[in-house]
Length: 284
Image (cartoon, rainbow, N blue to C red; front, side, top):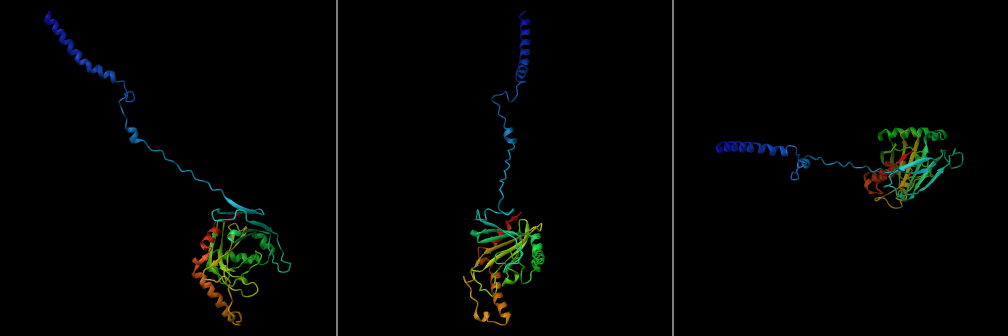
């Protein structure tokens, strides 16, 4: 009897020994890694993709001056004038003494930049002034390439002095220049209205004139500039003033043109700054 009991007991112990691991497995079989308080998952840190921050573009509000239904857009970082003098000039048939035919146009007087901006409608100019179509055609030709420029850049007489090509005593630093919605050319000169005028910083002028791409507006900009190698007030030598051979006069002014062409960096304000001002403009 005792031998049978021991045999049964041994069998029972063997069964318990075999079943114990299986029972332990059954306890953990339904448990996940999220239910184990001691389990740490590093895979999320290793595979997580950082969120990409997309920069938000700052919108810069367009700034412009407006007069007579015409808007002149500009770069506010280049312009000191906040409220310049603006005026609308009525048209003229040129019938009055010392007047020249021109359409109604607008004038922006940027006094802090010593600059004047004139804008006129092209079609009206061509219809009211018989000289306008030819000059506008010449300007368009120069816009196609400075190789089409000769000794003078034709000019529409749109400011109070009614400058024309014949008044330019020389043309220095001639260059093509685009603005935001058009193209034109700039140069530096000294004007002599009725006779030769002395060349000095008090009369040195930067001039830009161009046409919008749709050929709707004529843009003219006049800026006072100075140059380190010119006197403040010039004086024409007596031998030049009394010369009967005009080639002497031409050579005299050619000397100034050559000097200015060779030393563009000596201007005040710098010509590239004035160019940047012109290039920022848009006419609508």
